[in-house]
Image (cartoon, rainbow, N blue to C red):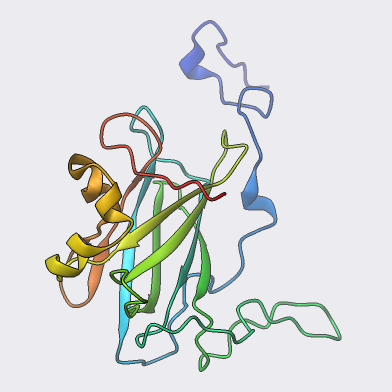
Length: 201
């Protein structure tokens, strides 16, 4: 029998009584949740980043849900993100052709997430963006934010939502441009560099 030294808090593993739920990782992940873009589509972009708590530690069991318009700025209305076999109830996955605009990814053990989707087009007066809903332990109510893509400074400056955000905090809503159609977007729940979260009424 292994004896655990309980005299030091850092040697005791957290249990459900030590960690505020809910715990999403048991029921909500699904295969291919981050593969939103149809296979081989020329407007595919890759997004990746980390989710950090208020102390700057990565969250290994958070969920990032993404919704985005298609490259023409239209909101997709097709079903199919979580198709199931009507006979067995098993998960069939996406069909690889239709773009639903929606996906859900879980952070890994290092708090990292990634997804492939289509570059969203502008809608109305808004600069192109992806809507984000974040679920994590300790959050009894999920959080909403947006990911704006860099590159068009005039469109970002004219965006109705971004123009209401203090200039010093706008960068928390804009992804960092990487190479070959990749973007990084970290989500910080509290503290320095806290992501701007939105409240819908």
